[in-house]
Structure formats: C-alpha cells, structure tokens
Length: 115
Image (cartoon, rainbow, N blue to C red; front, side, top):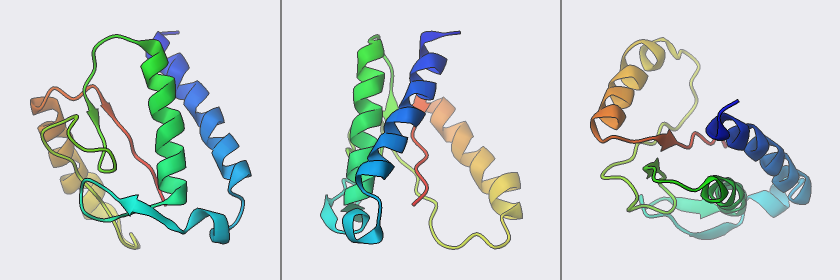
C-alpha cells in the first residue's frame, strides 16, 4: 500500500473521531470562521479538515492540496453545493471538467467533504 493510500484510509478514521466528538447539529453547525472561498466554515468543516491536513502533513513530501477552507495552496478551488437530486450532469460533465482543471494545476490531493 502506498503511503498516500494508507494516509487517506487513516484519515477516514480521524474523521470518524471528529464525528464522535461533534455528535449533533448543535456542535457541528456553529460558524467557526469565513473560509478563504468566502463561505462559512462550520465547526464540523474546520475540525474534519484539520485532522485530514494533520494526517497528510505527517506523510511529508511535496504535494498541492485544494481546499476552500484554508485557501492559497492551489491556484483555484471548486465548490459543489446544493441538493443533487439529479446528479447526471455533475457526473458526466461538471466533475470531469473540474478534474481536468485540477490536473492542469498539478493538484495532487483534493479534499471532498460532504456536509
């Protein structure tokens, strides 16, 4: 197993720990700050991203990370929000186009955090 795959799998456990520490909406939804992308960063967003970033930093090495919350690690970021009752266009067009741009930007890691 590569160190990246191992780190990502371990990060899943880290996020489960965050979810256990913040079990309800009362703990998860307070706004912690405004993200670099301009939207609200909730407590659960901040906590989940913090443990993932810590885990990835422990791997070491050079990599480019896309994060709306911390910003400035990649030249652009993407945010997909709202109810996806018909995700066909997102799956067939929007996500592949975003992935192409991330490849163009030489991004190594993209955090996808559903909230």
